[in-house]
Image (tube, rainbow, N blue to C red):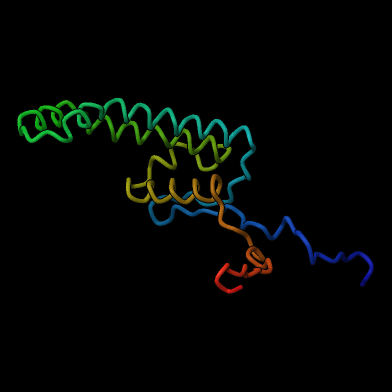
Length: 153
C-alpha cells in the first residue's frame, strides 16, 4: 500500500449516500447542495410533519364521519365544510419545514415559488433521502444461508 493511502475495503462513510444536490431549474434559478441535516433538524421536521397530518386529519374528520353514508346530502355537507383552499395553504406552510430541514438552503420562498406538482416531488425526494434513505453501495452483499425445511430432512 502506498504511503498516505488507506484501504477502504470495509465501511466508507463517503460512499454510503450521495450528496443532497438539487436544482429547481427551469422553474427557479435556485440550485446547490443541501447540508446533511442534524438529528435535531430531522426530529423537528418529523414533529412538523406529524402536526401537519394531525391538522389535516382533524379538518377531514367530517368526511370520515360520513364516508360510509349513502345520504348524498350528508356527503355534500361534509365536502362543503372542507376548506380545500386552506389545505393548499397548509401544504404551502410545509415549505418552511422543508427549508429548516435543509438548513435554509433552499429557502422556504424558493421552495414555495415552485409549481405545486414540482414542490410535491421535491418534498418526496428530500424526505425519502433524509428520513428513509435507500441502502448504500455494497449493501446486500451478505451471504445468504438457505435453511433446510423439515421435509428436506
